[in-house]
Amino acid sequence: MPELNFENLSDTLLSLNKVFEEDTAKAINRNITARNWLIGYYIVNYEQNGKDRAEYGEK
Image 1 (cartoon, rainbow, N blue to C red):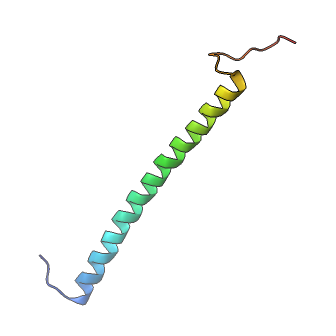
Image 2 (cartoon, helix red, strand yellow):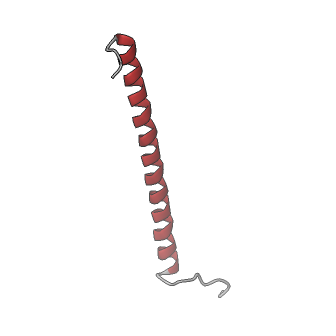
């Protein structure tokens, strides 16, 4: 363990904060990606009325 002084304390806290900020950003990106995928999934299901493919050119 490094010597306990203000500089080491400051460096440790800054490092700790950086690690958690990076992890938080990754979690947010995963959640936004999942949210956007699900929104698209539900819109497609709504538009296609549960069918596997859209029907084009019938009119």
